[in-house]
Length: 398
Image (tube, rainbow, N blue to C red; front, side, top):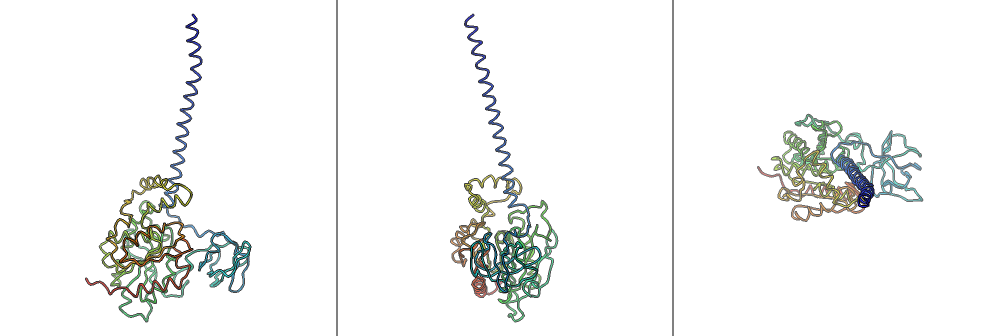
């Protein structure tokens, strides 16, 4: 009787323990499921930053404090103190701001020019590295033609700016094809068009799939350059069919990845005589790891983002790493990268230049951010670009 009572007591005591254990297990499973759901949402959002087109305007977060002839005072912050030359955008207008003239308590005064629109104290503006707004005629007063480059997805809009009329005929047979970056547009490329034109190059500022006004990719996503290079190939083919005898490819940011993919994959790469790259994406894995660290996460947490990109776009990561294909870049290369680039790690450009010392002329630019090397010192940047183009060898013989 006593043993039966003891056994019953043990069972009664064990039951709550089993229930608590089941609750702990159930709670653990629920927490794991929640963590997985959060991880999926986070990695999906991060992968969308890379894959999903997003053509939002520059954020207008800087307040205009005062406007005087030739100068403007802005609230400090959001890069309003950044040295150099930038565009100033607001809802109904555009201007250009130059060097910083003075700084006060919470304000910065800069040189002001080329005001288009109603600019008064109290409105909010955004600074953009494009500097110029509109097409080549509106922004620079240059003659140009809007053309549609034949492409497998349909006509790709482009601006064609002829070489200066006084250029030698031989020079005019060289075309520069300029490729903007991720979620960007052709206005970014206008900064160097005067130098290209004066050096005797015809410029073709191109669009590629998922740009505003251009055909979409079949799935509506970017593919990190793995499909977009086909649009660059179409532009090279267009140039060769319209009088170009040799081609210089110029690329910013992801435009650099389109160029490196083209050089690896296209038979037309033999018609390219030189490359000019500004803060190019040369290795997407390094970029994803770098951006994880930029927001305070360990670099290895970029791996789940890669997995999500794999699931959505299935890229060939090794093909997208130009550092693994140095043999495809045995031609003159001009390379700019800013040391404070917060988006594309300068280490990839360092490594690229180190692998190709015979071919790469490399300038590391201080202070400024992503693709802003020109903005810091336009005259010096243009001089280096002009010198590089003038030093190119004669056209390749077929």
